[in-house]
Amino acid sequence: MAVQKRTSTNVLLHTALQNFYSAAEEMGLEDGLVEVLSRPERAICVSVPVKMDDGSVRVFNGYRVQHSTVCGPAKGGLRFHPDVNLEECEALASLMTWKCSLAGIPYGGGKGGIAVDPFELSPREREMMTRTFAARIAPFIGDWTDVPAPDVNTGGPEMVWIMDTISKLRGKLEPGVVTGKPITYWGSKGRTAATGLGVSTCVLELLKRKGIDPKDATVIVQGFGNVGHYNALFLQQAGCKIVGISDITGGYYNPKGIDVVAAKAHVEKHPKRILEGYDEPGLQKMDGNAILEQECLVLSPCALEGVINEKNAGKLKCKYIVEGANGPTKPEGDKILDERGILVVPDFLANSGGVIGSYFEWVQDLAGFFWTEEEYNSRLVPIMKDNFKRVWDYAEEHNVKMRRAAFLVAIKRVADGLRTKGFFL
Ligand SMILES: NC(=O)C1=CN([C@@H]2O[C@H](COP(=O)(O)OP(=O)(O)OC[C@H]3O[C@@H](n4cnc5c(N)ncnc54)[C@H](OP(=O)(O)O)[C@@H]3O)[C@@H](O)[C@H]2O)C=CC1
Ligand SMILES: O=C(O)CCC(=O)C(=O)O
Image (cartoon, rainbow, N blue to C red; front, side, top):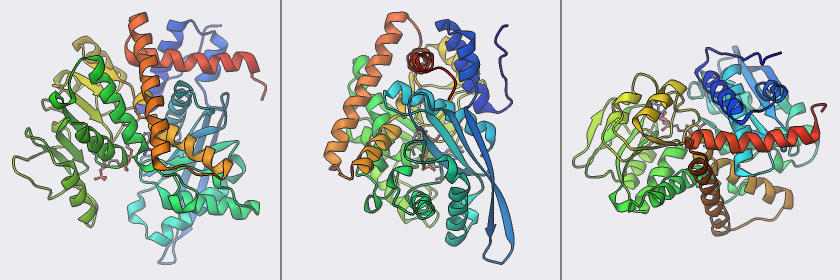
């Protein structure tokens, strides 16, 4: 019987399934494996009741999806955002499977989160919500089963609350149950900047392949959070001119180059930690979508999914796209970029520095022995360069786009594992 292709109205799941099916078809993957890998192994839905500060009770929906554990424990972030839903988690979990496979680290893929606007909660409410969520997914997570990490709107505090809740439930310290923890609490030096360092490494590798001096490169970075800010900072340090940045308050464009350090200092001082009100000579403020369409050599979307699509792909004025966010380009947008000859370095290669960095943290936690930041970065950067090279070379050799090359390489490792191990457990 032919493969029953799944479809979804969710942008991310639609993108994930289309990318997977077309790569699977190209590599001639057996139907049985296509069926298995187009579905998650396990999807957990929990309700998360919280007693609010005013005495009322609110119940939030929480999710954890484990797409694959063929190559190791499920691994991937937790996001707190009003738009979080099961299908989105499923898509992001599958992307984690391919990301970990491509990176050559011993993990499968998982993702989860809570449908909530965390900024509406008090610190106490946020902690209670996180701890209750941790307790409800406790039977399914652990250092050798599923290891969550930060994603959008989560970070060190949430990871500590999860680790502490699980440790109390199990009656022993469980540092390896989550990564992205603060350094003082079994975290690792280097993890905070790891994703941005990985994205910027891919930009610089791309420039090298194209024979472009970083000093001649203009870059626009969408999103000025963890990934976007560090990406912009490292690129500026490497000599690139950052001509555009953006956050929820809109786009900030300066053809003379934005001072990333000053912009970050402004955000740190702002009570809402946003770019609003940032100014410097030559800066033009614009709509958040318009910034994507400004002139630059490299555009690096580091905020949201689906931002490059059928509506704007024809209007972009960049030559290269290096995806820091997960799923920023819809397949419809990808097709147009392809026709226009705009080269895309795909998300699960470009932003894999985060999970590779998490792997380093997990290794240190299991060993109880910690590295210096120099050791951490000196391991991360060569792995990123090697992975970039592997995908670049495959794309050149087989005359395919980098996204397709990355999928083909990543699916092969998981498929080989499945063939060897079988499907029974
Ligand atoms: N953190 C990590 O290690 C990894 C993250 N990723 C992915 O990278 C992306 C960003 O994650 P991360 O940096 O951690 O998240 P953060 O929450 O730290 O930052 C997100 C950024 O996006 C901005 N943003 C939100 N909405 C818009 C909008 N409409 N237009 C422009 N900017 C917007 C936010 O602005 P504001 O602050 O004003 O709300 C913020 O600057 C996500 O797709 C995530 O899955 C991938 C791999 C690892
Ligand atoms: O650090 C991790 O384990 C996962 C990071 C993540 O969620 C991602 O790469 O999208």
